[in-house]
Length: 145
Image (cartoon, rainbow, N blue to C red; front, side):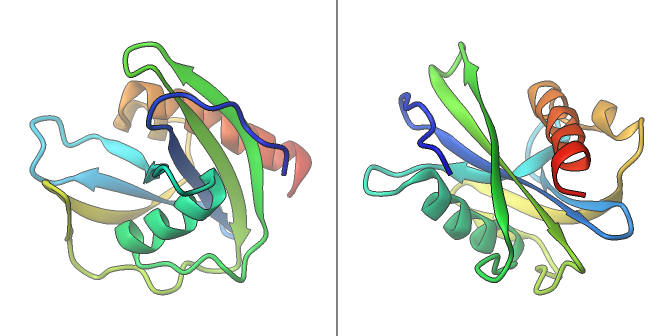
C-alpha cells in the first residue's frame, strides 16, 4: 500500500463486499438523519490509516479483518472537515462476527446493516459516503473481482 496523504484527523473507511453482492454499512441510530455510512473512523496520532481501519471496523461492526486482503483504493479530501477519507476495499466470502445489536461509539449509537449492492443504495447514504461508496465498488469490480 502506498502512503496516503495526511490531513487533520483523517478517517479510514472500508467498503467490504461479499461474493453474493452485499455490503456492510453502519447507521447512527440516534442521529437526526439516520442515513447509511461506510464503516470506519478517525485515524489517531499514533496510527496508520490501515491500523486505524482494523480497529474501527472491529469496534463498529464486530468484524475482524486481519485475515482478509484489504486494498487501499483512494483518498478523498473533505473541505468542510479539512481531512482526508482513506478508502479501502475488501472482498469477503461472508461477513462474520457482525454485532447483533447497536453499539455505543462515543456519543453515537451505531447499527450495523447488510445491504444488497444496488443502484438505489447510494441514495440511502450520507451524500459524500454515497459518492465514495460508488467509486470504491467500481474500483473493486474493475481491479479485484
